[in-house]
Image (cartoon, rainbow, N blue to C red; front, side):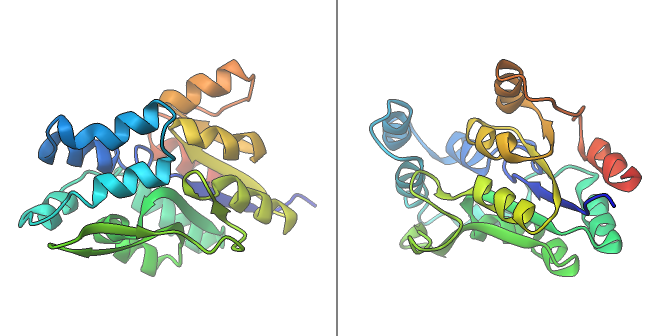
Length: 216
């Protein structure tokens, strides 16, 4: 008997066309405000800490919420989420970002389709900006570098007997891609998977993932 499927997806740049951080930085940040991110890229800060410092600069922006809601998501993602619900395929969204903007964008889809969101919690006010909080260190999905462990989610599902499909686009996604049974990769993740000879499925849009989940 074949193992049942579970689907784990990155959010920024995978479900959306681009990262919330990248889009927000282009809209709101000057060069000096990008210093924490340059420190991360130079290996001087952890991803979580740099992103948290960046997010906290998003203060007193009356259009932040409307801007966030305007970010495009993949046209076939809602249909894919509905398919997972109908076929009883557990669907996890795992993000090194935060729940504030994810829920603004797709909160209704998450609720309607019983999606498990694994990401950093964030509180927002115009005075403080976006303030992220780490998971407890004893949490099974804790990761010191980005806050949450996508690979940990994949491993847990495999231990429960699932055949795990993973979709992602960025450098941190190589860790869960190494653990997954099936990988849909694009952008930087596709490049890294090719370097490590990790087989990948065609991933032009969520229509490719929809077809795979429907047929398997």
